[in-house]
Length: 185
Ligand SMILES: Cc1cc2nc3c(=O)[nH]c(=O)nc-3n(C[C@H](O)[C@H](O)[C@H](O)COP(=O)(O)O)c2cc1C
Image (cartoon, rainbow, N blue to C red):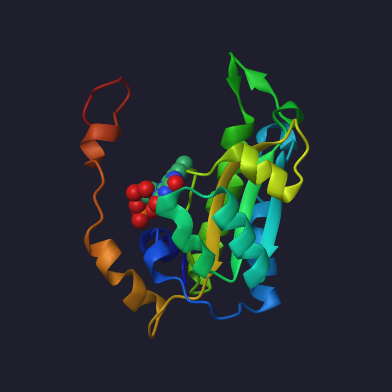
């Protein structure tokens, strides 16, 4: 799949998680995509906890994910992205670690899409409970989680069809300007 095709086809598909096992090399591939992401001063603040296996996944999801995200326990793998904010810099009062982790996570979900695997970014998680369950050090912050799964159905395309059909995005003219703020591109 071309990069742009993966960008177009990626969708949040928590309603389409199959329990089918994922080959270890595919899990390794999506994590490698994350590891190769750029980061401010190459600080690489991201850390990933791979929660794998039915018992482990159910324990973490039931113990810390909000109701709307409980469906994540259908997946054979849940990846938790986290970071120690002190591992990254603060620029003009903005903590950069969230930006850097987000770049790695976007690489991860695009690589998953490329492999025909589904993801769904989830932030609605009880951080304290999650930290306890995973044994995260006090200074490490939870950033985002995603289930990683094969899609239910015959193909990724079929699984994503409905969601992609409902996709809404702001028009380019609302978000892209030419030379000065507000000028049409
Ligand atoms: C930072 C972030 C947090 C999110 N948290 C949740 C969440 O807790 N639960 C959920 O169902 N979706 C969550 N989403 C998914 C968004 O709702 C979804 O990306 C958005 O509606 C666009 O849909 P799409 O990903 O299918 O294109 C989150 C997405 C992002 C980027």
